[in-house]
Image 1 (cartoon, rainbow, N blue to C red):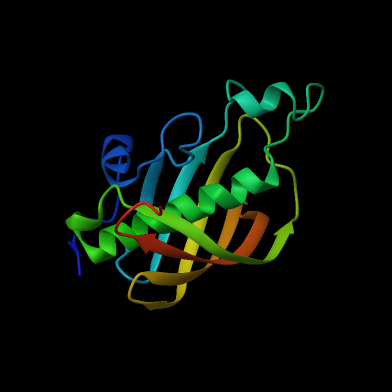
Image 2: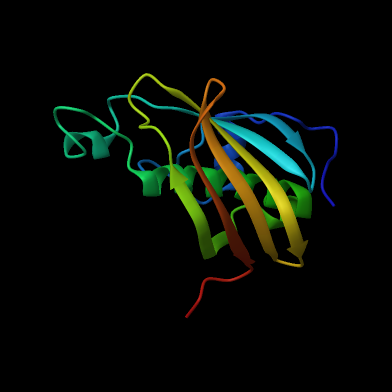
Amino acid sequence: MGETAVTTLDIKRIIEMLPHRYPILLVDRVIDMKEGESIVGLKNVTMNEPHFMGHFPDFPVMPGVLIIEAMAQTAALLVVHSLGKEMEGKLVYFMTIDEARFRKPVTPGDSLELHCDVIKSRGNIWKFKGEAKVGDVVHAQATFSAMLLDEKPE
């Protein structure tokens, strides 16, 4: 497994670990992490994000699929950290998204906390329970699984 002492990550470290870039990089910071168990990421939602031009012009709401993507990127950081430095930059693909629920809208100005707990892992396949919160209020939740690939698919 990876380095156990690290519990936070800044954006520079996140960019080293994930292949995602603007405008799809949706994690600004990791504020807590327990290797192989759980992670809490932070996404500061701003009006500058391109999806708000059309979703919706008079009432900007972060699309639910992007909230789930932000949870998945947070979970991917835990996977990469837990498996070690040689996994950095590898692609992580969704396998399943289940029990997705959207409770309240996420809007510009919100600090979205992305809580992900490992349900199980076997090799390069991991399953998580995720919650997206603003303060103590759950705005979205889902269970999802993903696979870390060593190479890009053909």
